[in-house]
Each structure stands twice: as structure tokens, then as C-alpha cells.
Length: 169
Image (cartoon, rainbow, N blue to C red; front, side):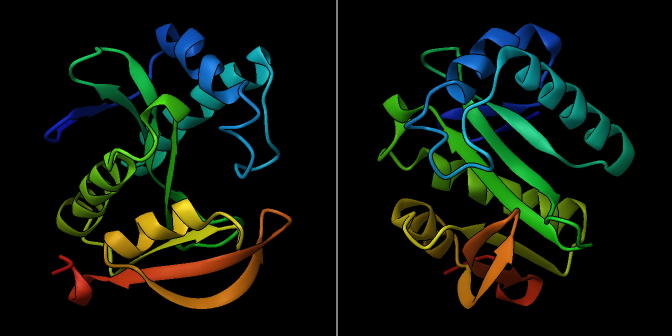
């Protein structure tokens, strides 16, 4: 588990299904995430997939738990970018917690884990061009825009940060 000023980042468990489904079933939250809203069964499969990813790779998505509210408010962490060996930073938060700097806080912790624990050379992130809020998070954590690209069957803006650029100033 990782602790930040306002969050605990920990691995998901099957007991988290209801909380994650609350987030994954909200169309506004999932507007820019993958294929959009997920069913309860798809959310359960996602938890199994995240757990397996951790087991196989020693990294993955964490459950983001708000320290004060003591509830899961989203997910954040590292995964493989769509059919590539590149490592991608990803995050999704409950809309009640938007615009509070929590995605940035969780993302900085994920970058720290990637560079200091996993010793990665580069971490990337993508967002649909219209998802300005997500791109702002990438910029705040020191990532730089590189190119327009296509991943997960969507046109995206591609950002990255290398170990030599970390930590951001």
C-alpha cells in the first residue's frame, strides 16, 4: 500500500466490487474511459484482471481510497499500453472528487513507484483530445505531449515522462 497526503493506494479485492461498479457504471465518469460504462459482471472481470496483472508484473491499478471518507473513490496506477510493451499511467475518479488535485496526487505516487521501485525508464499516458482535464493531470505531473496517436480504438494525445525528467520541478 502507498500513502499520499489524502489517499491510500492499495490493491483491489473482490470486496471492492460494489464501489468500483458505482464508478464504472456512471456514464459521466466513464465518458472518456475505454468503451465506456461497464456492467457489474464486466467490473468483476476487471478486478480479476487487475489482480492477475499485479501478480504477473508487480504493478497495476490501485484502488484509490480517500483517507477522510474511507471509501474507494477510483483507481490509479500503471498498466501496459494497448498491445505494446510501454507502461501507461491511468486514472479514473468518482466525479464527486474531481477538481481537487486527487488524480494528480495519485498519479505522482504511481510515477514514483514506477521510477523508484520498478526502475522504469519511461512512463506514458494517453487521453482523448477533448479530455482536457486528463491532459492537465499529465502536464501537472511533468509529462510532455509527444504526438497524436491511436490506441484502444480511439484517437488520443500521447504524453510521456522519462526517468531523467522525474521528479517534475
